[in-house]
Picture 1 (cartoon, rainbow, N blue to C red):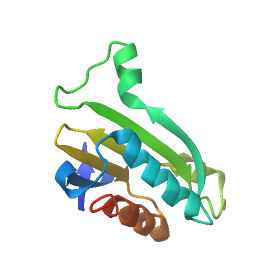
Picture 2 (tube, rainbow, N blue to C red; picture 1 turned 45 degrees about the vertical axis):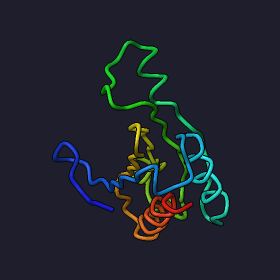
Picture 3 (cartoon, rainbow, N blue to C red; picture 1 turned 90 degrees about the vertical axis):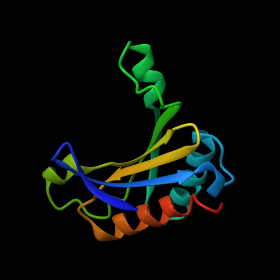
Picture 4 (tube, helix red, strand yellow; picture 1 turned 180 degrees about the horizontal axis):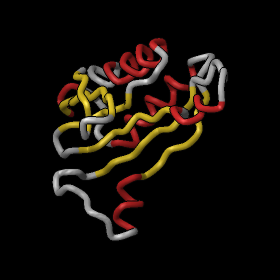
Length: 129
């Protein structure tokens, strides 16, 4: 798992998983696994799945040629709501892009270490499944 600053603003975790390292062959299969992980966590609520690829294509947006599919799974850890500003960093999302021979899994760093640890564990769990 690699940590980076995307566009010099966003702290992002990124992981590339070759399809040869997992039994999953589609973004939907990966999202099914992630949804099961979210559902198994007692403090996480699944919200939605967003088809970023279909949306961008439908509005005539640009998609890099090597991206075959791209979706986000949206969920919330939300164990505290100490101030209204906290809403700006919630909910969380994990993005999964099909790059042909690999999956790129990304998520933005959360201000809560337990959330980062869970998301990192879930992402790494995609390999060898």
